[in-house]
Length: 338
Length: 294
Image (cartoon, rainbow over all chains, first blue to last red; front, top):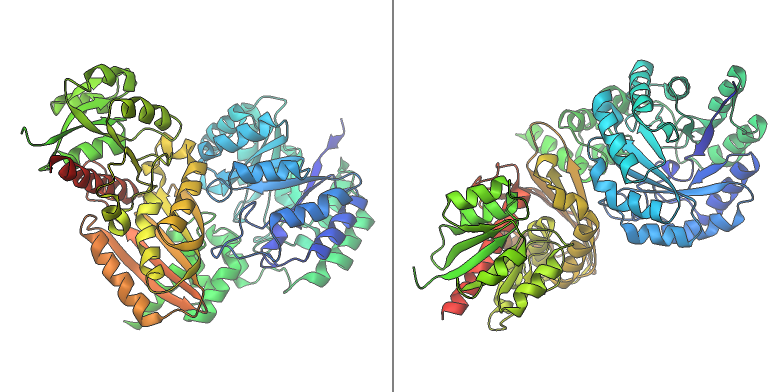
């Protein structure tokens, strides 16, 4: 039997983190068209922190979600567009806006132990007959049994696909296998399963392959890895590995390489690589989009980003708590002075 | 005892029970009814043990007793979905509602900022905004009374264990209602609210961050003084309210980082989010009761 997977592109959403949410409409349009032409079936477009992410806390984008979506959706020949929403940041009003602009897939992201905060939003997307995904962030912070419980909750609200999301790029292949496997066995057979990786320990591709072997059929990846931390699973590498293994993605390898090389690398503000701070995210299990905030706090308060990140991990900070980076740096700087 | 105003609490969950603990010490309010919907509820049992009458039939179970028991104030600690109906039914009988849900049927009430404005208006319903609103709007008001605030944003982080099913089901109402009150009561031209539920063990104490963008460069000395004055005002009824860091000034940004530890009346200390809500509601209730007794 041939294994088929859906590649879900993150370049224009997770890739907004390293761009400090400042991508231009033209960059979005050009890259989206390149991805569409390469055969990528699903492309996510929003602020890095999802619909409604525009804020002091996460960064003000160059354009609001409405403008990005309106710029990209009508130009797609085959690809569908998805939008991410974190309950507590965005609301059902944002979902309504996204649907009206022609968004096909809604991904409702909650921390891996708090699925019930997404009930309103998953139910709404389901009622609108949209492709509805439940996205369990920081999945390394819950064990397989706990994840099963949360995944089943999201499924019961109406999600037709559940993601195990390695937001910290912390998981090793075995961590992925046991989680995806447990969730696969617990969910209805028609419910799809996805995996979202970060490359902080260079495990993005390997973990995605393990996830597929354990029953996942949607894989998140970004061209040239453009994403938070050391980036997401690089699409062009993932597609090449899939071809070697006989896994069908429908993505044209040469074309996706060209998108990565010719369209995405040139817009990077800094190389997406595993520097000591990105490595610390993966090593300490810290939310990948904290990276640039910790670097800025280092510059301002003189406390090394690496030490701030380790402290945030120790204190159990989760996705969305960007405010605690400056707070932690201030507290650490005070302690050092005394 | 005859010169106290009698009240009911709707919703025998964490908030309702904590409120009862706080108000049993009141000189002007006397609890008489606890209203629930589940006959096996722990909260109803606790209320009975404290000598209250209880019903598990919701507000409908209370309505026939409003007149004979002289219930004049009701605190609603249910959810934004059921509050409007509770408010309508009790309002018809002349009961004043103090709404602890984010339904925002009535005008917002953040005691250290605008409690006095409600005096003499005989309002039928006041809304206590949200826990995040009670913890942050006083600080926004402290900045906006110094100079114009173009934009204010709050991030409330609460412990998973302190987020009941009401909060979880009402998360959109939380962000909308809080953002609305950041503008209306905080005095910011535009408001935004973010809430994070963190499952760390041991549970983290409620944290709140306030970011204001001022229209003109921030007057640092005046803002710092105003903020410290407001902190003392809030500490009068929430002693565990404390500035951890800030004010940070960067360009036109003013950021404040606070922690809210509860009193530990009924709820654990980390649940400062629930404590600041019940403390604010209790304070408002007492003021309205004093007005009724006058």
